[in-house]
Length: 234
Image (cartoon, rainbow, N blue to C red; front, side, top):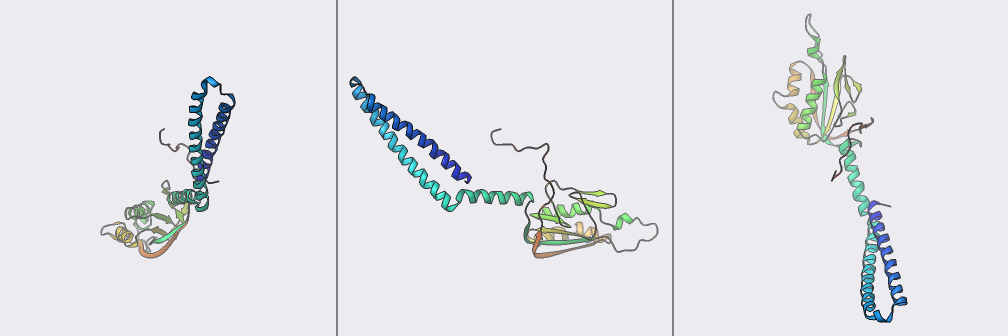
């Protein structure tokens, strides 16, 4: 039973119990009324009867609403839609849509004696800057080499490799993002921006607008050890 149906069913149950009490009260009054209190009990009987009739009408109305909810699936559909939306925001469901594809790679330049090789390879800070610009450009979902980024995803250096969601990734690196393709590309290609900087050092950096990119769901564990939701009124 859907939540909305459950609420209506509970209300019907309570009203049914109230009606039973009313019927019993009415019966007791009719059977045990002393003559000296005839007028008083007659008035009371009238009030109880009217209250009972009112409850019957309310029960009938709620029963109709319960039937309508079951036919249309209104409450259940609303809950399902909100759940789908929450899963999408959390990155727990795959998404697709227009966006951009960004491909990055180390510099193909052959090092000269004495040159620092770190100048010509991709670093985690380069990825962080690209992701930050995409988010500033309105990206709704982002993945790096198939790793869906969540709010708590890490992009960090581990020796000579880069970790995303604790998974090791190596160049070439493909970053996918859904959103307005034009706005996303503009945020990366802005003069003096991250892609221009990477190209200055000879790194390979290309961004293409796409009519559709597909971004997978996050497939790792989601654990909240210290945090808990705060309910309204707490």
